[in-house]
Amino acid sequence: MFSKFMHGKDEEELRRLKMIFLTELGQHLNRITRFAGADLEKTINLIEAAQHDALQYEVEEILETKVKEGEVQLLVSWLGFTEEDDSWEPAVDMFEYVPKLVLAALRDADSDPVIEDLLHELGGS
Image (spheres, rainbow, N blue to C red):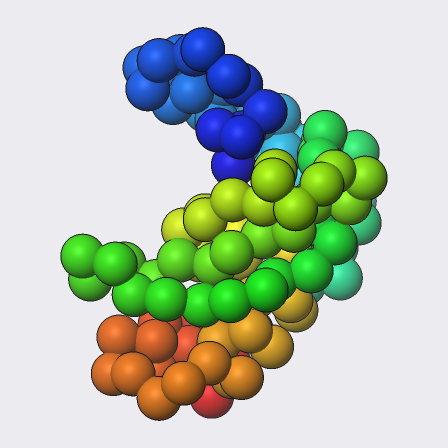
């Protein structure tokens, strides 16, 4: 997700930064669960609310969908950044942060068995 913003960083550093980001979001959701109770249902709305506390970059829109090497990827436009900063991100990763946008993009994508399988797996069909 941060590759366009981390010029000069190697792949290992980018992976480390992504893991820090995912860990922060997970910790925030865990704190919510701890204070609200273990039976709290982590709905799409709750996840989206939690993302605003953890995200450093906000998704403006999803521009395109493609399948590359069996993985569904999304071309993401980042709020406040230029078209040069748009980046291809794994759909599964983006679903954690903006589930409604991902589901809409997958539904609007050209018919492809890999995309249709992922849509079904994410509960969007």
